[in-house]
Image 1 (tube, rainbow, N blue to C red):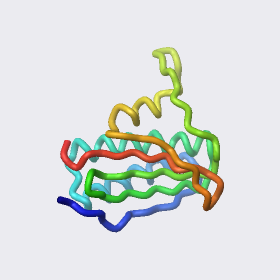
Image 2 (cartoon, rainbow, N blue to C red):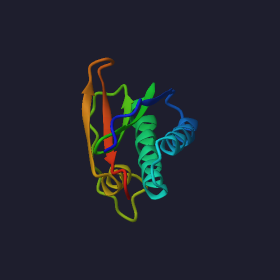
Image 3 (cartoon, rainbow, N blue to C red):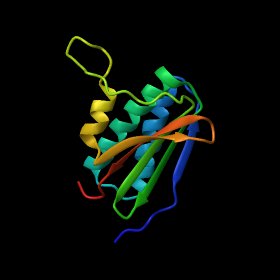
Image 4 (cartoon, rainbow, N blue to C red):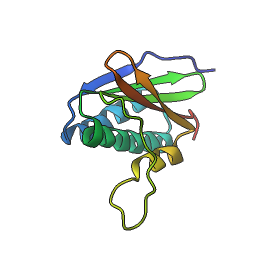
Length: 131
């Protein structure tokens, strides 16, 4: 049984270049935590989508936290907006609204909580240890 690991954390400004930085940070953390390649790719995709949402809709700073728990890997993306994430209805003709459906597709579970530290929110997801 795997126990909780120390969390890997990073804070980034709300700018487009932070999306690439967040993906790299997650990939490095996933490697250190021994996440299988397929799950690492799923996590990288989810992190990219959630950080993009934070850059576009919430502003910064944006925090990323990755931690192994007994039941899987938990990824948290915090931002300064109290607005709840909204599941879009993506269509072929729509350029947006794909982020949360992608997160829901790759995650075991996902959700969001208010963040009293900065009146923002934390969007989180879990990935299993074994693909």
